[in-house]
Image (cartoon, rainbow over all chains, first blue to last red; front, side):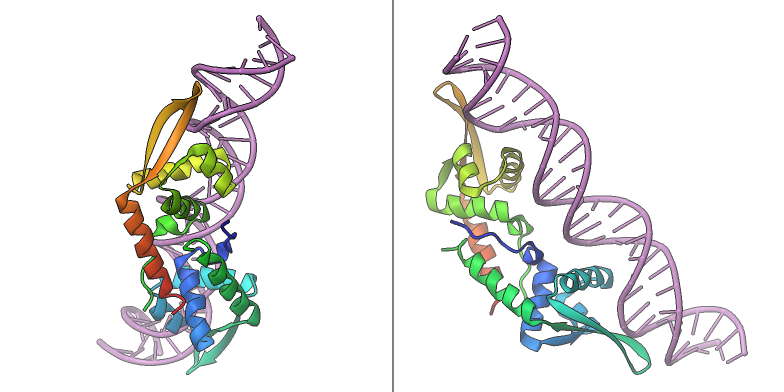
Length: 93
Length: 93
DNA sequence: TAAATTTGGTTTATAAAATAAACCAGTTTA
DNA sequence: TAAACTGGTTTATTTTATAAACCAAATTTA
């Protein structure tokens, strides 16, 4: 009947992050922060979980002498997101 | 950009319950239990939350001498579910 | 040039939610 | 009448989300 949903995506913030990365592929921490409206702390935690799941990579570098965190969606992440969408459809016919 | 999602529906079990009730309108506790595969305890908690939110009513009666709990979706519940679907679409374009 | 402020985050602490396990009242079966 | 089953609820534990505090380094202000 209903497909099991990937619990990683049953979070508005994580869903927003991946949904945005589906479009832009890579984003800076600050860009994700303003795009999603999340607090820095919450965003830090949630990108960590997405990285653990293998759905994005986190690259730490510098820009204009300041630390810069870059998030890039992975192929695994793209597939997981698309699967989630398919599964979700079963709840709305 | 992304619409805020109703957190009530960011739960597979609650989503399953309401999605099923969208079709059948009313269901017995046991039917919901087998439909969703949930444990009785979890189901009891989650229908309670859906009732608090005004999305379903819980009616306690008897059938063949045994207690029977009936859940019926409300108009508010139907609208909330439809709104959730609309909002969700913004995450998948 | 030293104190204050800002940047770009991380870590810790608290509150809320999900889940499992224990429990309970009543009914039926052996 | 004791054991087992029905139809759940309640309690306890774990997980998750969120907010608040914190931190190092860079920059600005006085």
